[in-house]
Length: 246
Image 1 (cartoon, rainbow, N blue to C red):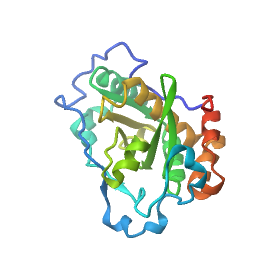
Image 2 (cartoon, rainbow, N blue to C red; image 1 turned 180 degrees about the vertical axis):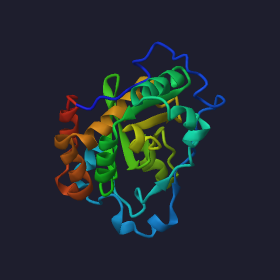
Image 3 (cartoon, one colour; image 1 turned 90 degrees about the horizontal axis):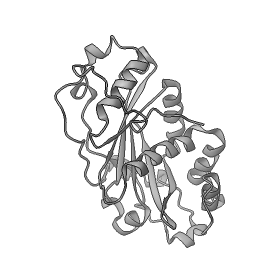
Image 4 (tube, rainbow, N blue to C red; image 1 turned 60 degrees about the horizontal axis):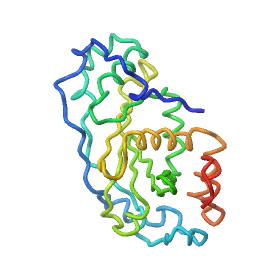
């Protein structure tokens, strides 16, 4: 099972404060915007066959998920002193990254380069998925788009209502600056709407999304969703996550 380095695991704050640049505010994202080039390629969009999804109230239109581009997040060199970071080991850098973001309103993690490359490869033609997020006595269905170096998550119901104007609830950015030199990819997540997601829910979503792309058995469901929609059953996702069939 995939194990991520998370800011929720760390409690000790690193003394290495000069590694980071001046304190920055949360990375700001607004509503999804349609990439005009991708929009013209509608035939390559999310699979259109959702006849078995009637229980979720979802239907497909030609504009559904034709490709989105988030506003650009802060580059890594605006958060961290790249030159100073070069002298740190991968383990120390991951620890400092976690400690720095503790209590700053972000979800942070790190990933081995090989796993990031696998995520990159698999998401190239399987960009979309749906994840049930447990909420009390039921679940809310999250619509996921993996468009590396970003992951974007919004509510399926919001997407149905707003289409391409739907705003993300949560975004994650992958920084590959140290992928080759330290076998380390840094991840920073931002909760756009705190009324929609808690920190722990966003952390769970980040880990769960990656598990579906990086675990061979779970990835078969992602492939089916994108390439064989007629055979996709949402209950299989629920079973994979040990959630009850409501």
